[in-house]
Amino acid sequence: AQSVAQPEDQVNVAEGNPLTVKCTYSVSGNPYLFWYVQYPNRGLQFLLKYITGDNLVKGSYGFEAEFNKSQTSFHLKKPSALVSDSALYFCAVRAITGGGNKLTFGTGTQLKVEL
Amino acid sequence: GAGVSQSPSNKVTEKGKDVELRCDPISGHTALYWYRQSLGQGLEFLIYFQGNSAPDKSGLPSDRFSAERTGGSVSTLTIQRTQQEDSAVYLCASSPDRTAFYGYTFGSGTRLTVV
Image 1: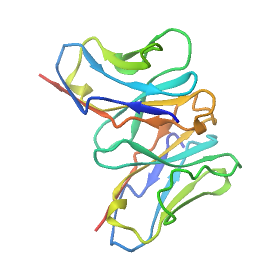
Image 2: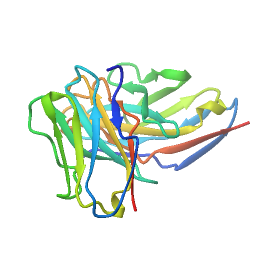
Image 3: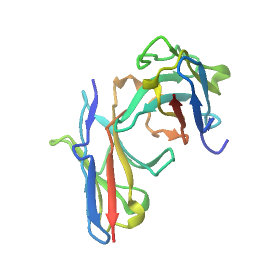
Image 4: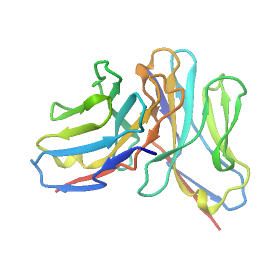
């Protein structure tokens, strides 16, 4: 079975400060890993993904994530947060082999960026 | 179309009534997924269609839930004899292939409220 844990329901950060949203995963074998963002009353938007290659992945809106195989983590980061980054963030995983051809999502982390 | 389209965007129904939710995926996307997002919960997988293959129904919570995909395109999720616990946002997503290599493109969702 595959699973994702997002240990923080909410993360608060001041605008201009760096932000980190944590994600750990569990799969058999190698993973595909994704981050999505959801703004109020909207569907989920793709931010970035890790498939293979460099452990540091860069995505939309200045976000990046680091794949750490030994810690089974895929934390989302941004060097300087903006108020407009405030949204609900979801991490997702599927095993490259097996996994039932579907993504498993975490419970989401609400990011609040304040002035 | 340019994106995944879901209708209606909001639906209020009385307990015990049947509802139909519609999803129109991106043209050419062979994979279509339904997820449910309840308050405070992550995304719960419901059902997955891939081309002409038999759908993966493993996430449907009860036999009151069913879905079909006609002509490999539009999908309808039907909930019979709705219950209050069915209240949630129902999200549809599509993908170009079965591997999720490209991730998903999500619709804006249908917010279902059972009163």
